[in-house]
Amino acid sequence: MSQSIPDQFFEKLKNQQQSESDHLQLTEWFRTASEAEIEEVLNKYSWYFQNEPDERYPENGYLANLIESKLNEAEGSSESNKKLPKQKNSWPFIKKIAAMAAMLCALGLFYYFFKDKKTPEFSAHVTHAAKIVPGGNKAMLTLGNGKVIVLDSAHNGMLASQGGVHVYKSKNGRLVYDVSKYNAQPTDELTYNTISTPRGGQYQVVLPDGSKVWLNAQSSLKFPARFTDKQRSVTLEGEAYFEVAKDKMHPFKVSVNNTEVVVLGTHFNIMGYNDEDATTTTLLEGSVKIIKGNTQQMIVPGQQAMVKQDITVKNVNVNEAVEWKNGNFNFAHEKLQSIMRKIARWYDVDVDYEGKTTSATFVGTIPRSQNITEVLKYLELTGLVHFKITERRITAMP
Image 1 (cartoon, rainbow, N blue to C red):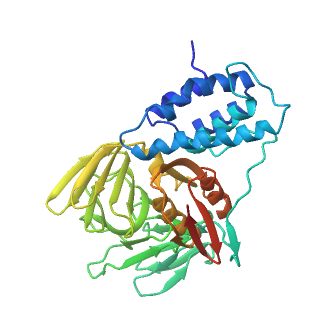
Image 2 (image 1 turned 180 degrees about the vertical axis):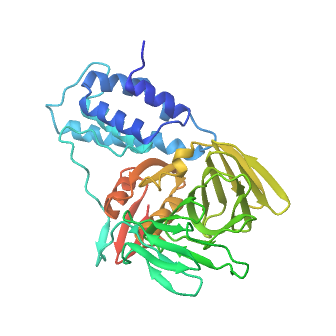
Image 3 (image 1 turned 90 degrees about the vertical axis):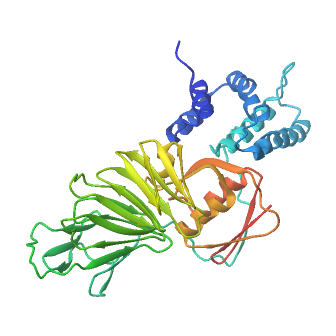
């Protein structure tokens, strides 16, 4: 007998294997579910939040409090509305809906299952707010001779020629290095180019060897206009996703935060922002060697290496690490400060904090194309944080 959609979802949730499509599928199920079906799921899975503490995230006790507060709110609502259906040994329907809404907010589904399906109002206080829009394809290319090209406003076609290496901006907005017409000469000098994205920017580049790199916001990649016969070396600041062209004779090396990532041909993500407390490399395909000082560590697909003073390796859901490349914020048991750093980079805003910041962690997936007020609203739905917007400054408050 096949599992129901809720059963499938909570089974994946238990193993931390749920994806965005699973969230969307469950959301659609609840849109059409009957009162009896919702009651059955609530009765079956509410214990997951109230009686099953997660030792890795002890602060998750807030979930039970969140559900309880929603029930109290619904209790007041039901007292003022005598027409609400009541059933023996069960909650009024509006209370069941409120409790399920709390569970879903905690899960990151960000959906309120009221009959009118209206989204709650954003409660942030907005003062002289500048126009804050999501990031987009923005980057600058600095050539070896010092010339700077603003890529988002540059025309499509050839942008520069460096000793036979042609640099193009493709029709789909990628930066492409073409070495097909390059003829090596003994006197050729190796010149380096740097592509950098601002806050609120991202860009894709195809390197001289055919490797593809996606740069996240506030990041830069330094690389030679052509690779030598010995190795392929680049330097990263910030975050990037790599699809490295296979070449067993010429290893590909990424230098980031005094760490080296060495590969032959593979797909992986590196997050190495200076304001994060660790550099992480997440492997999707192939194999990677992480080098930090005298320490080396190999990782395999499905693993993530975290580098601080030492290298630690754990198994992860690798798709979560590359959701940014696919156009989404992904919060996987993530604290508020970490989430706000992502928001600050993508929307080019500054973030302050007032009062005691919640220590709870958040789970959810939100499109990066959303207006910033929509993203903040979804976080506010948990009841754990509220926001104030002044110009381009976001203040987080209890």
